[in-house]
Length: 401
Image 1: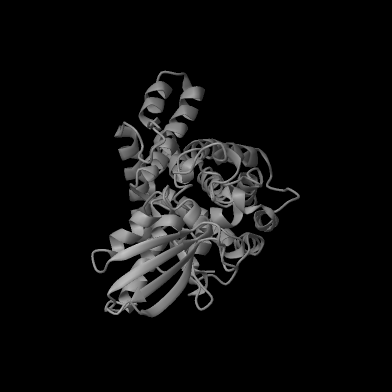
Image 2: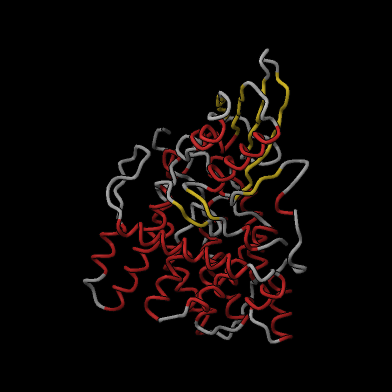
């Protein structure tokens, strides 16, 4: 299992698989074919089906057209066997002869892979790949999950997590200040600032929940507008973890050093899912995005409140279990409806998972790793129309942009 840095990628929204991944792929192809006369990029499957709404073409063209003329070909009905998010890059010489072809896949969280390489398997940082084994080690040696992370990552991880936390906070603050309509054509108004104002007018319990909603909306709206965010584990689910951590920092005065440790724990749980299943909506549906984000946030919150390894695992397990089967059905291919609201609800559910686990002794029948496997199997069983193609579910009544 590789570094948790791969779970927390800093970049611009609205989609890690549809913008961050294609941007990186474009950069890699440009490096190997800088003498070409022109480029052509063919997008397949889910990447093509919701690419316009996710700004995939814009992301690729901004990388390639300053260097060479580039055309985009859309193939939403063609699903390549390796992964639903396929891209074929072609380079042509001055005689319009194809001189190079490279097919690569954006497999979630900005990660790339194909038959020849897989960024999920580039460098082993962790020797254990399952939470049950990590939990047993932590309980045996008296370690916290974040200490297990510290033992395996190099010392630079804390500087990296500090930058992650800074970007998360900045996204919340920008999102709370911004107003107006989100881009894309749905005419969706930003709501974070209004939720913040209304929350402050209520008593403590409703105010607390309203503030969490406002923070999650702020980050998710920034993502939808193409703002700078952190994948946690994806762009589409980037509002959940920051909302929970920011809320607890503001209401409980947790020091930033403790927040960074909570981030390390969250990253560990997300990394296990990424390694053993997927965080790609195109592969397993929204359960792999918002569901995993909820699990990460539940684990982080429970650690901040002093939970044992068993209680932290229980909080994460509930966060994911109760999102099983969640479809990825973005209206008009935009990361707006239902994505933005799902971030707010998942943040609240993560806090509920933390509370529930805190009341328990951490013992329960279904473990986190089992839920991850069920999520993987469920994702495999979901028809493609429920996996980021905008052809089913909530997206079906709406014409794709």
